Amino acid sequence: MTAAHVGPQRYQERYPAKLEAARQARRDIALALETWGLPQLVDVAEQVVTELVANAVEHTDADTVGASITRTGEESARIVVTDTSRTRPVPGTLSPDAEHGRGLLLVGALAHDWGSELVHGGKRVWAELRADGGQ
Image: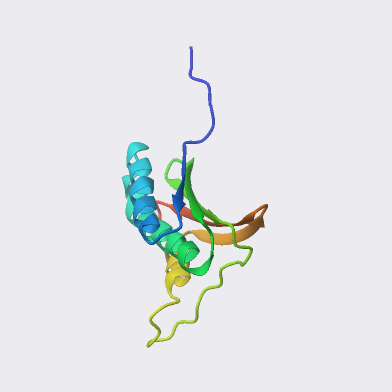
């Protein structure tokens, strides 16, 4: 007898939209990746989910923020962060004296691909991670 395929490995959680949400999501996503045997994705995933959750907390009036990770291949995963805002994120311009606005530029540099889409009740921002690195 062989095991039946039951779908991809996936973890999801909702967090109160507070500053500590990024830390909690980072910890949970890292634990999921370690459990799945994907430690090579942990560092990048921690940085990406931290930026995406922090953006959702800082730039929306959402009460909660959702974060999920889905294993999409042998050495790849997709992070999704959701909130109730209908405003899509836009990367800032890189300025040497800017104190903010680099988060999405960092996500773009670390992820293989990323984007956002409007969904019923808000938006989702996603990032594709691969063990072979970003772009």
